[in-house]
Length: 146
Image (cartoon, rainbow, N blue to C red):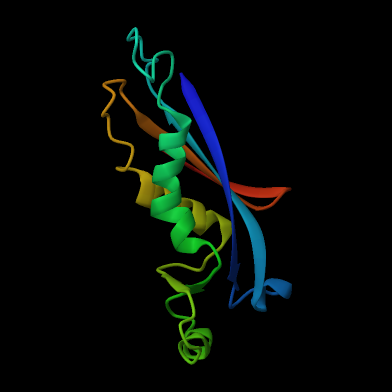
C-alpha cells in the first residue's frame, strides 16, 4: 500500500547559468509530496489501526527535516559566490546552501536524501520512502524515486 502527504513552503533561489529569467533572484510557492509504502497496520485498538503510518507523523517528520529548514529561506548553490557574498551581508538572513544548483530536480533529490532514513520501520509495517515529488509551480515538478 502507498500513502502520500503534501506540504507547502515558500523559498527563493536562482539558477546562475540559466539562459533565461531563472538566472535572476526569484521565489516560488513550492509543494512537496512524500510517498511511503508499507503494510497496513492491523492491530485492534491501536490509534494507527488500518493505516500504513499516521499522516500527521509523516507530515511532522517532513516538516522538521525539510519544510521548516527551507521555508522562507534563500536556497543557494554553494559555488554561487556572488549571491553568497550578498546574502552573507544581510543580518540574520535565512540561507540554505545547496551542494548542487537548486533546481526542482536537485531539490527533490536532496529532500529524498534527507528523508530516506527518517521514516523508520517503527510500526513493523515495512515502511519505505518511495518518492519525493517537488512542485516548483502548479504545472512543473520533479520526482525523486527510490
